[in-house]
Length: 104
Image 1 (cartoon, rainbow, N blue to C red):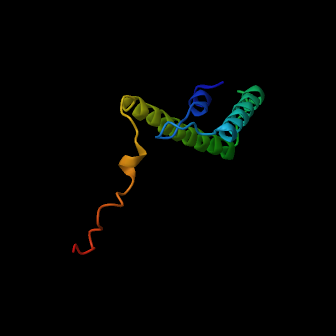
Image 2 (spheres, rainbow, N blue to C red):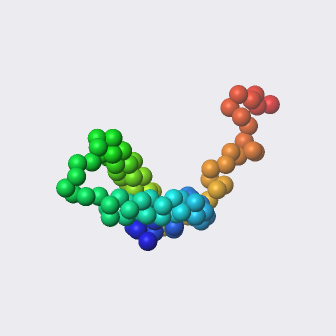
Image 3 (spheres, one colour):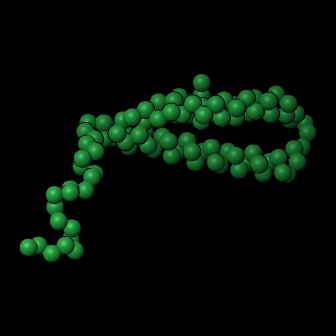
């Protein structure tokens, strides 16, 4: 399993709930399979068409962006590992009057 696939497999949201990434992992496996096929059939003595070079370059950039984003999430989660997440901290307090309500 690749580094990116291992990260995706253990992804959790901010509350610590495990996120189901089975579909993403399946897609990553498919990407790895296609990369292996390209490598095994790529002849270094042949010149690849420009459209092939372009698509590989775009795919590499996109995957790099995704990897950096996911690694950043994990770093942020490690930085806040000692912090307790309390959903109540992020909910509106129903007992307090709204700012536009008049107090009696």
